[in-house]
Image (cartoon, rainbow, N blue to C red):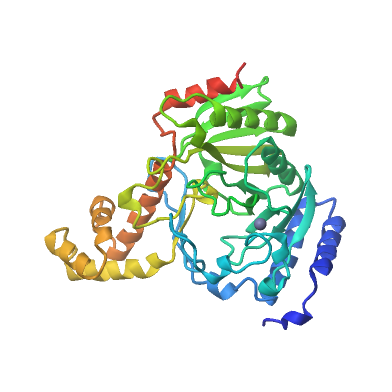
Length: 416
Ligand SMILES: [Zn+2]
């Protein structure tokens, strides 16, 4: 039941309660961050800020294994949040109605426009940050971690330091950063923020294609066998991990790559402290904002028009809610056409306003159709296959581009 908003605890009271929970558990950091998040989550449900009913609308497909990578990808259709289409201004009430300079500014917390929103403020590196739940969490403990100052998203060594520091204080939690270039994932570049969550992301299970040992094996850098390029930096020594990550980040950002426009180079980042072996695990996904070269290909835009963000790079697809209805309609159209790929199908798709799906059906649905499964199951299978290609489309280094990868490693000087 949603409480009367005027009787809710204030932001100051919530802050004190959370500080107390964390202090009480200072010898068990994992319990500390989990208990404190449960506390804020339950508050956010009571205040109506998180609408659990809407979260139940999401479709979560079974893990997808039919591909060359030997790991399970998670495809979800997100029916709780509005779709943000490349090049279009977001019109949904939540995104256009705010206090301060933007929708994630601290001024929104507990304001008239976000009466039920509360946050937890903490110091990290040289910054004051606060973490809060989004109105539509994607998975367990999904938080946005925001700079208290409205300052633009610019990745730097401090980004890496802060991610590692948060990983240290919240073991096993996943701290992520989107890029700082338009067209590569982040929807708000005006205000610096991180994404975070407790999901068991696919990418952490990816096997190495190539491995580099640094500092007598203190640090391992792996190039992962994964649809989009990812380097995984593993090590127990936080300072050393920071140094190697920064070298790789900096050389990708400022290096010389013949075929790439350096002014558009950026990265998506993810960090965690693996509690099984006490290693930091830091992931760097190189990105380049050149469009449409590193955007989702046109055949797949009917599946996802949004920019591809860090969670998706990590193997968790967040596809737009419209697909729920569209898959059902495509199922009907295909049934009506006796599941044939022909001119009549084209006509029917046109008639029902689904012509943008024709090439996709031809390439991803009919190609590899499994007769032992229903039309609908083949449609969701095609959707899962599409996700892996979307990841590859958005990656500036493809799986077979050894030379480009080597050039990056060389310019980073991590092996010297
Ligand atoms: Zn702001």
